[in-house]
Amino acid sequence: MNQVPIVDFSAFARDDASPDDRARTAHELVDAFTNVGFVYLCGHGVDDDLVNESFNWSAKLFALPYETKMRAPHPPDGAYHRGYSGVGKEKVGQVDPTKQKGVSTSRKVPDVKESFEIGNERDTRLPNIWLPEDALPGFRAFMTRFYARMSTLSAQLLTALAAGLRLPDADMLRAAHAQERYQLRLLHYPPVPVSELRAGLKERIAAHTDFGTFTLLFQDSVGGLEVASPTNPAHFLPVPPLPGTLVVNVGDMLQRWTNDRFRSTMHRVRAPPPATHEPALTRARYSIPFFVSADDGTVVKCLPGCEGEGGPKYEPVDSREWINARLRATY
Ligand SMILES: O=C(O)CCC(=O)C(=O)O
Ligand SMILES: [Fe+2]
Image (cartoon, rainbow, N blue to C red; front, side, top):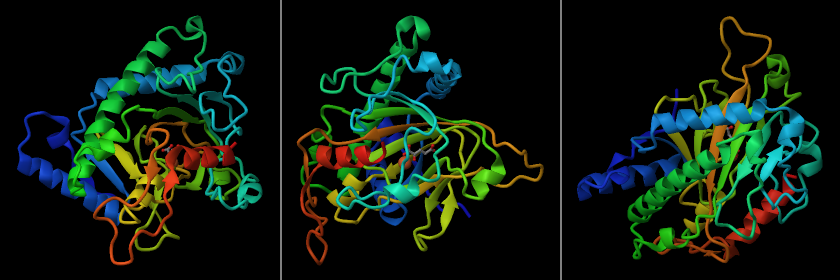
């Protein structure tokens, strides 16, 4: 059974919703983040056409010859997360940056994926790395527009979360994300033998948590995304694509902010669910995560009202330092 709840977000995506509708939606979100750490959002207000168009651009980008894609190469420093990374370049895994373990063993099984990373066009600290315009005319303009649309939705979600958590300052979370230094990521998992994915000889993306505040994810119709079960973390539940929805999941920073009230849940991408006439090769998978994280210099510490009985469990942490340490471990 699918246990990732569906929340209708239209009360925050529209201007004319009643306070009661907003309160109910905020409460449902907080419930989902508390119990599962994952939620499907419908009524999110991002146009289907815009989403389809973004997948079309992604397909066009990855269909370009490797040499062309390498005209926007991701820099060797994992924390400069911009541009194109070819298959096998990045290995996502669960590495705690404060402990030097895990990398060497998990790197033995390659992640079969390629990616293109896009930041905020206004971010002068980590400028975007684009292909020359003539290599894919219109790509940059579209992605900049899509980034802005996702930023707007992210702000609405931050407002909803502040309401659901009953924070004394309703704007506090939004204010910590004023610079919108987010990360738009196009992902392509090329076809691989199903048997190799099932045998664990290859992976699409290994089990990990996301690093930031939360992640918005669009996935195509292929399937394979799985989330650790809330009741038995060794067991993973499928998160199949549901038309018209996007998936939102809690990241490490929001888990720390909420003092573990919200769960930054492990997730991974495996082979699509078994089919009766199973092909030898999986279909290619495309997905588009949008990683929302706090402004540089934000000190993430227990939010008012989240202290619980035992008080804050975590030392305050600078959000950028945490994310950079985790990004460097993946490269
Ligand atoms: O491809 C997906 O659906 C998941 C991607 C993901 O978890 C990530 O990039 O952090
Ligand atoms: Fe992820």
